Image 1 (cartoon, rainbow, N blue to C red):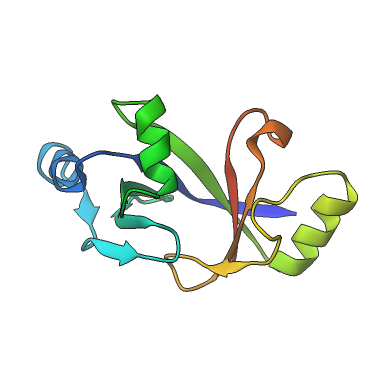
Image 2 (tube, rainbow, N blue to C red):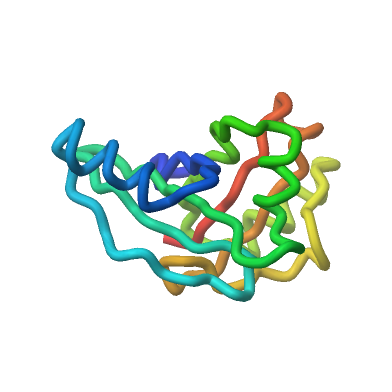
Length: 134
């Protein structure tokens, strides 16, 4: 059901400083910072030959990333994202197998302009998992 690894998301307090590490120290190609108000974050994507790294910075006090950073002040890996061919079919199959979808269970448009869902970490080995329609 799952396809390729789309990205690994890292929560950071200072997205500009984190971007500089990837761009200046590691020589990576990085995108411009973009606000994602529907998700309460600002994002930067680092392009790698086989996947992407997504840097997440809180956008407002109620950001889920702000809560993550309260528990993990140094930041860290927040979630992994896998591609699926059909997000509704993937959701329905997962729910039928007992997996929990976060939120209202309906896909939202993610940072790449495609439908996404998040799966409860307790159902996936303690890892918050995002599915993105390919």
